[in-house]
Length: 50
Image (cartoon, rainbow, N blue to C red):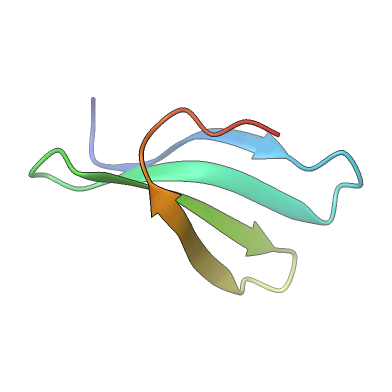
């Protein structure tokens, strides 16, 4: 597991992207972002999928 964003996947309507973001300590969050760059944490965890 490397730090940074990975496992990115576009939403079915292509308006959002979901991805995991992991830190150096190994903790990961599932994040969502829209096309304007607004991001939010959805939950702790790994392997996001629609």
